[in-house]
Length: 308
Image (cartoon, rainbow, N blue to C red):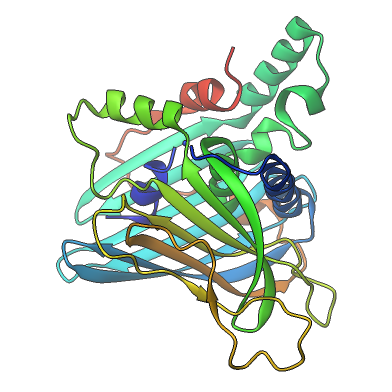
C-alpha cells in the first residue's frame, strides 16, 4: 500500500459546534494558503501504515517553491518486506505528474493545470461569481497534488472541529474530522462493495503548527496527519500535551477527541526549513519509463475541485 492509496481513500457527520467547525475550516484554509502562497521550504516525510497486522514505514522528502508558483515535489519510498514501493508527485505549475511503482508495476498520471485554470475562469463567468465565492482564496490549479491537496480534501470531505494541543512540546491546532455521510455513500457506491473497506478511513486528525520557529518560519504548516478506521478495534489514540497557562506541563497529558477506531496511517512532516526557491527546471517531470503510457487525470480534478 502506497502513500497515495491511503490518501485517495480519504475522499468526505457527527453533530458539531458550528463555531468550532467554522474556525476549523478557516484554519484549514489558512494552512492551504501557507502551503501555496508562502515561502519556499523543504521538509522530511515519514509515514507509518498499519495493515494486515503489521506496520510498514515509508520515508520521503517534500519541496515547494510557494509564492503562487505551484511548483513542488513530493517523493515517498516504502519497503513492505517483499516489494519496494515508491510514489512521486511533481509539478512545475503547468503540469502535475504522479508516478506510482509497486514492484515492477508502474502507473503514471498527468494533470493539465492550464485546463483547470481555464475551466475555473469559465465557471466564474458563467456564475457571475468571484474567485473567493467559488473556490476560496487559492486558485484551483494550486490545490492539485502534494500536501495542499491532502489538506484541501480533508477540509471538504470531513466535518471538522478545532482544538488546541501540543506535539513534542510544540503548540499546535488540531483539526479533528469525521467523514461526511454523503462522501461515504459515494465512496461505497463507487467501490461496488457491500461492506465498508477496513482500510478506508472514516476519521482524521491533523496537527498544524500554531507558532513559528526562531526564524519566524513554520506557523500554519501541517505536522501530523492521522487517518482512522471505523471503531471496530480498540483505539490507538494520539496522546497530546495540552496548551496550558501553567509553566510546568511535563506531567500533563490528555487525549484530544480520541477516535473510536485504530490508526490506519500516520504522516509526519518534520525538519521543515525555509529555503531559496529552486529554478522551475527542478520541478519538471523526466521519465525513463518509455513503455508506460500515462493517463490524463485532468477531468477527475475538474469534477472534484470545481463541480458544475
